[in-house]
Amino acid sequence: MPPSAPTNLDYTPPDGGWGWAVVFGSFISIGFSYAFPKSLTIYYKEIQEYFSATYSEIAWVSSIMLAAMYAGGPVSSVLVNRYGSRPVVMIGGVMVGAGMVASSFGTTIMHLYICVGIIGGFGLSFNLQPALTIIGKYFQVKRPMANGLAMAGSPVFLSTLAPLNQFLFDSFGWRGSFLILGGFVMNCCVAGALMRPIEVKPRASPAASANGAPGDKEQSPDARSPANKRGCAGRVNQFIDLSLFKHRGYLIYLVGNVVLFFGFFAPVVFLAPYAKHMQVDEYSAALLLSIFALVDMFARPITGLVANTRWVRPRIQYFFSFSVAYNGLCHVLCPLASGYGGLVVYAVFFGVAFGMLCALLFEVLMDLVGAQRFSSAVGLATIIECAPVLLGPPISGALVDLFHDYKYMYYACGVMMLVPGIFLFIMNYFNYKWLAQEAQQSRQQEDEEEAGAMEELKELRSSAENKPEETLG
Image 1 (cartoon, rainbow, N blue to C red):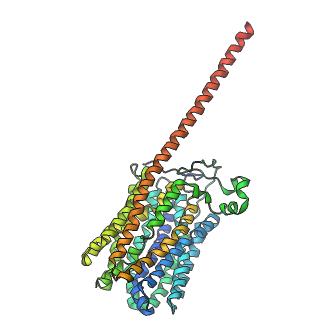
Image 2: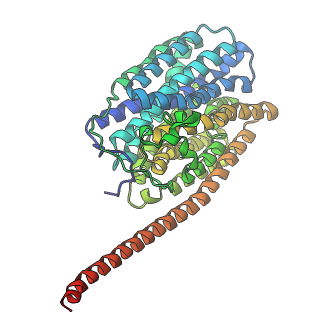
Image 3: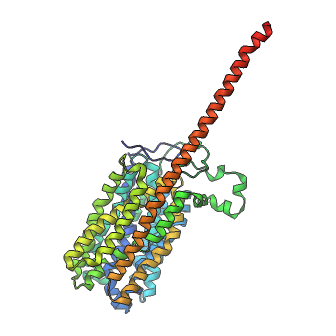
């Protein structure tokens, strides 16, 4: 068994038992959170014609939904830290369901922005982050594998929802489909019910080390010095850990993610419309999403298993950097695909790349900051990432409107992921090097202190031995 990543929990996670039921609940919750906005692209062409909207305008629906899901991260973090994952996920399921039901009565595109985008997006944020956080409470040694299995919910649900949405549209139209989907997404409440709080007897945690290395112990807000409690920043820090902005590895992660998210969702959002633009029939276009999701479905747990090996886990940040660059390479080469067969090949390679990235996206963050600070880390990251998540698909849609061709959009998304992939690889190399140097300096300091203590002990013993001789003299 590979060595576990450092953790800062005040107990030993069970790495099994009810934790696997929690993984199943997270599987459902994460599946809806990530697959739901993508699966709605099936309705884009028809909604676009119904409201006489442009590609860019219709892309705002999923874009606002994803951005709201990310923007709600800090609120979700505070609620999870205060009330736990179970009630937050259940409230999120109700919000998404209510938003979809209300959108089925919409008369303008703005109505969809509010109901599907804002209300549904915030509901998804209450599903996503608690599901990610609770896995770190139940797993330590098997955490990469548990995360990979939970993240596999996204492709499993996407491969199911894509053809289901096409069937619902043919049978009930987009309004009836949204009404049915509103009831379907209420199953998030069932997922939340599985997220039972872990029962442990916490012990006092040692003070956090000052160098911000991965797995540093973190004091509870109540244990911090009174000086830190005073003022607005101190009060905010009691709910969400702002000291993460001093964490070198976390800042590297944030910079890379802000850039990559400009090109992260658009290739999936426009995959089915791209196929229809190439005169592919509707069901075959929807099948591309299913193929992509099927490959993605197997790529995520396999990536989790690989990441848990003793060769990869100590340097998992490199694995993440490679997955980002691999996604970018797939998008840059996508315009070379000709015909439906070429799109199928692209969907397969993209499914592998996307599955790798998604399986590692939050695991590497937990590897950097530890499980205890993970909830705050996700909340702060998502609020920063919501801007590129919001702007990415509409900018890509604007490129399609401008050039009347999808290849420039795929080129742009490819570059926006290749660049951060290279950046993350270089910066993680230096970060690992700096951490090794800091660890070596710390060991040297400890050795010097130990040597000094031994020398002092020898002097005391020597002084004690000389005293009887002086007395006799």
